[in-house]
Length: 128
Image 1: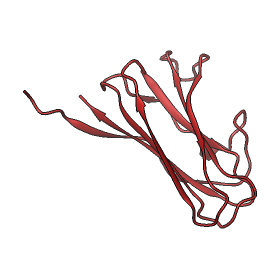
Image 2 (image 1 turned 30 degrees about the horizontal axis):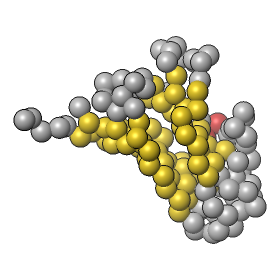
Image 3 (image 1 turned 120 degrees about the vertical axis):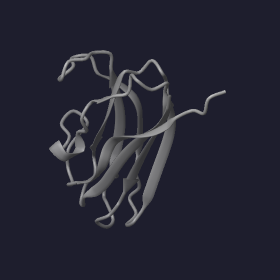
Image 4 (image 1 turned 180 degrees about the horizontal axis):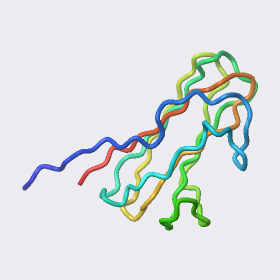
């Protein structure tokens, strides 16, 4: 049996997103690019929300989204999974989920933090 090749795939590089923004209108820094993951046989999608600017009055939120379309700006966008951070200063919240092999393109959007910037990041551990 041949060894499985494991590939790290950046979904959203670690970025400090300023306070403000909503799911419908996130800060520009909180919108990740569409990443083509169709060459992989699924994998584990991980995300992290770190409070790097102090205590918050509303936590940061991350939503992974997927689309069946190949267009640069797809019209069909669906939520895959969402999770939230913490209010405490220096908190560090991470979540991992299985990414089904049927998903072709995925991105992360980040929003909701109030008072301070929050650092978001996401990666896919993929196998082929």
